[in-house]
Amino acid sequence: MNERRSTPAFAFALALALATAPAAARALPAHAAPAARTTEWEVTAAPAYDALCLVGVLGGDPFYVRYFEEAYRHFDARFTAAERDAFRQVKRILKDEVAGIVSARLGLVFSAAEAGGLGAAPARARGSIAWLLRVARDPVRARAALERTPYWSDEGWAAYERARPHLVRALQALGRAGFEDYWERQARPGIERRIAELGPFLGAHDVAPAVEARLGKPLPSRRITVNVLAFARPHGIRIVGTRFLADVTFASDVMVRNAIHEMMHPPYDASRPDIAQAVAALGADPLVRARVEHHDRSFGYNTVEGYVEEDVVEAMEAVIADQLGVGRADQAGYWRKHDDGMHVLAAALYVELRRAEAAAGGPVVVPAFLVDAVRRGDLTGERLARTVEAFLGPEALAGAAPPAGR
Image 1 (cartoon, helix red, strand yellow):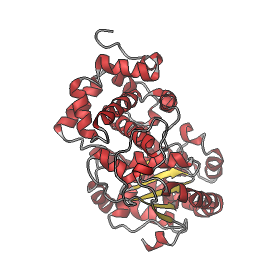
Image 2 (cartoon, rainbow, N blue to C red; image 1 turned 45 degrees about the horizontal axis):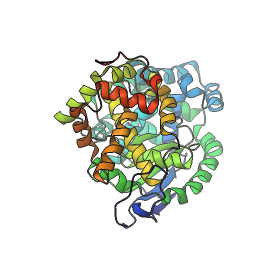
Image 3 (tube, rainbow, N blue to C red; image 1 turned 90 degrees about the vertical axis):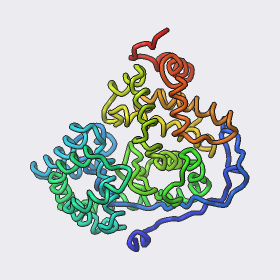
Image 4 (cartoon, rainbow, N blue to C red; image 1 turned 90 degrees about the horizontal axis):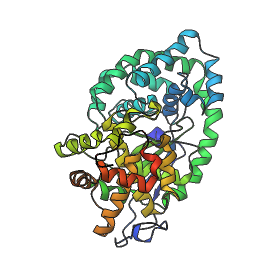
């Protein structure tokens, strides 16, 4: 903790209440009375997590290499054949075998370990590889820490354990190839400039109360930590606690939307019978099923459960972003292109959620809204198809069997 606070970081109490925050032209009406400042922002570098993101790049996956070709060439040229294979084995297990995202899986494990007593990740690059290796070599304590979070899964841990010996060799290779010096020289200056720029912008957006109103419960903390990284693209990545990883290249409004988005994972308790039933009903719809089964698996969301969770969060993010004045000018256009247009359920949820909040005169609790909307048939069958077609256009229905009656 002390090491992290010694780095350039910014904690900001917000200056505007929701009722007076700037609103997009299509923002929902704000009915809340002016409130005290509540969201506190911390923006900091996190070189250890940059190393974990780079592990995914150095597996040679073209999906990531295209963003970081210079770094890929720099390190790949310094590895032995055996070291190169270690990175590829991590990618094979965590991405190819279980359809996951390497950086996201590793970020969860290591942040859980950090929160669970294995020591804070170093604030500077020096010592980051040693810390990563210490965590990777202590799976018993890392597992115990992850089991205490909402992100535990037997399958996810089993995959990590299979990848762990290769990960140790990959981290050793990164250390030998000079990752720490490279990061200090190539990454830190740009990250520190970006941190200084982000502070005032983030400080004008009171994210936490708007998120809590839709979740129907308080966040673990109203202190949101943004770890600005050099190698996170194209993902914003939720890790344990009210923290997320974001790429240094992301625009400021994207950072706010990332904060809204990542703080809402998971948006509901998936073990609740009514939630599980609603998710299963959505997954059985031909339009949703087609998107889960036929998309670039590099995007993630390769199960019904993962896809529905993501689309619920994307819809909530869009509604809150509208309220806080950082909504996209063309939300429909974004969903037509984002992840090759797979998030059709998010578009329908957004339409229905805005309708529900307009009727209620303010925020609605989304888990209850989701269950009720599915029971009414608002998000399946003919109603889903009509809503998607009206908002995104008829091409959004391509590839799915038509629902009954169409």
